[in-house]
Structure formats: structure tokens, C-alpha cells
Length: 193
Image (tube, rainbow, N blue to C red):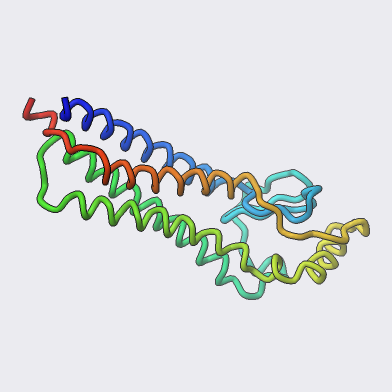
């Protein structure tokens, strides 16, 4: 009975991992991680940006905007997202291998650490909100008004975007998978049945 329950939970973990990887993959190609202003005057993703609701499909260079002189927030967020996906994929591979092939000594500890690293580094990608455009909204609003030839832009504060929601869902999946891994019984490998 515990073996069947453990197998069901392993399946849930693997499906949760695949969902989290999908969410983070979509986050990579989303241009609305942060929207500037409730009206969505402009938006920025981790690799792409958008203007007036239109997504630019060319990868941006931070220096092309003139405003983002310190690109450490953006490169840090990009690195954290990639590391989250690598840690999560590694955890998924370990869980799948142990579930299908054979038991590995201390695998639960390694899998748990990988899941923790995945959701923590995924959460650190939200550090993008620390960039100067989000902390100095008055000057950035004036910059956008000039760049977009729109004098109506007066309050372009950073607003949670779709990409942020996708990444948050991925972090929740990583956390949930790690929690299930700790609480669920460990089944015998499928090949031994």
C-alpha cells in the first residue's frame, strides 16, 4: 500500500517539476516581467522588452536604453532563473532515476537540496525589481515620457507582470515538490516490481 502511495507521489513530483520548468521557460521568453505603469507604457522581461503592449522579439542589450547603467540587477536575475532551471531539472532527473531504476544512498538529501536551490534561486530572480527604474520612478517616468513622446506618462512605477506570475508559480512548484519529497513514503523502484 505504501509503495503505491509513494509511486503516486513520485509521479506528482515529476509532473510538478515539468510544470515548473515550463513556467520558467515561458518566463524566459516573456517581455512583461515588470510593467512600467498600470497602463503598461513599457515592460521589461529578463531577455526581451515591450513598448505600448508590443513585445520586441530581439534580445535587448541593457546599455541600449541609456537608463540602465547598472546592469547587475538584470544579469543577476537572468543567472538566477537559469540556475533555478538547472537545479530543478537535476532534482527531477534524480527523483525519476531513483523512482524508475534503483535506490541511491542519500538521494533524498541531494534531491531536497536541489529543490531548495531551485526555489531559492528562482525567488532571487525577483531581484530585478531592485533596478534603478523601480527605485527611482519619478526620473524614470520622465525618461519614458521623453523616449515614447508621451507627456501623459507621469507615474511609471514598477507593476507585477505576467512573467513574474509565471516565475512565482514555478517557485511554488519547486517548493511543493521538495515538500512532497520529504513527506511522502519512498516507493521501491519500478524495475524491481
